[in-house]
Length: 459
Image (cartoon, rainbow, N blue to C red; front, side, top):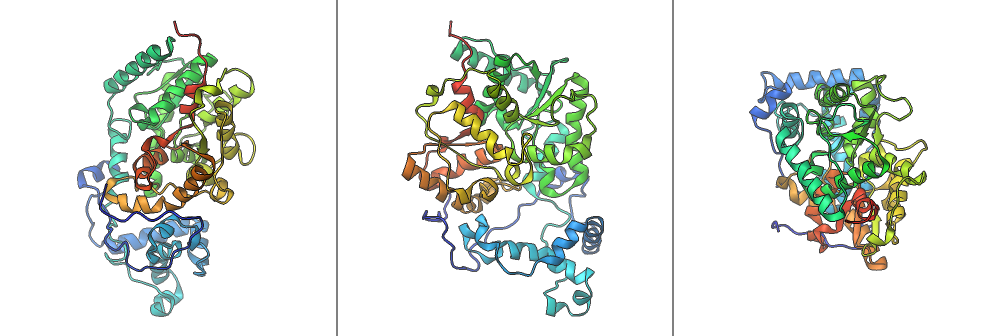
């Protein structure tokens, strides 16, 4: 384990006293130039970069009334402080939302408000300097290096087509050995009904891969033809985290190209939080319209929507007893909970995953109501922070979720936390041991489906 102090678990909420400088040693991690250039970035600070950055900020504000209102409206009341997982975990005042926001807001005031131009000290306005925005023009390491792999190969892991095919062949063999049933994992099959785009973690890592096996079993049991695409084998779109529209569109465009090339009728997104947010909230303007798809189905469609509909229609046979060793709770992922929706009713993103879980297990317990649903806590690894370079921040940022989890562990014997976000699963796999829980306590919703679904007797 890394050498830093893990916060002590206690009852939620515990609002810590301010401890200035506790995270002063944590610094930005900058992407190498060779990863920047394929994204259309220079890879180094450009001449007069301060002026370039200030001009760009003005352009963004002029193009978005919402951004201008956001920059002008905060009165620094601090009411958001006790809701921020990073402040709760670190006690560092610089991790308060009001402080993080004010970094950008102070520069905006300096150059784009009357008071900031003429009385900067009175309104907390600051000049654009390297100390204020340390990595302008250079780029954030984790997100930018991943986006470069997507542009070059098609997925975040840099997994080429032959390696992907080999992985899927291995999964077919594993499922056949375990169930006696030939469940296919198709790749680049023209004429399939469904194109599945899923996070590349589903192809190789625990517990993600159990979810991919669950998707395949659902399609098999329901008789739905489907395929993955080697051209667009990645659902995640980390361009959301760097705020770059051109890269956001370029990554998403691969999915449209694959759907047209393969002649599919539906596009289904796997268990990935920000991938679903981008798909649900932005695909229509980024890569729409989707007139070539079957109008009877939503575009996009989440894998949970597919499975939930099949369960309601009685198209799947599920044996809850297959999961009797598990007492399950559910973690609402941020981008699904607050940045998107699911199904045809408000709040469907909260109801649908839980109904799938209840159909697959006999023992389900929700965490405290103030820590789930629309008031959920982040896993602590979102927004492009999922790197071991930032492990201390990730562990401390997970504290509020770990407190809520600990409560249901102690009171109800919970031993499995399901999630529908690849980042959440990766984050908790790494973080859980710091809070004295096994790393395999986190799993996929469709991992539960995979265990419960009845495909036929083993031969």
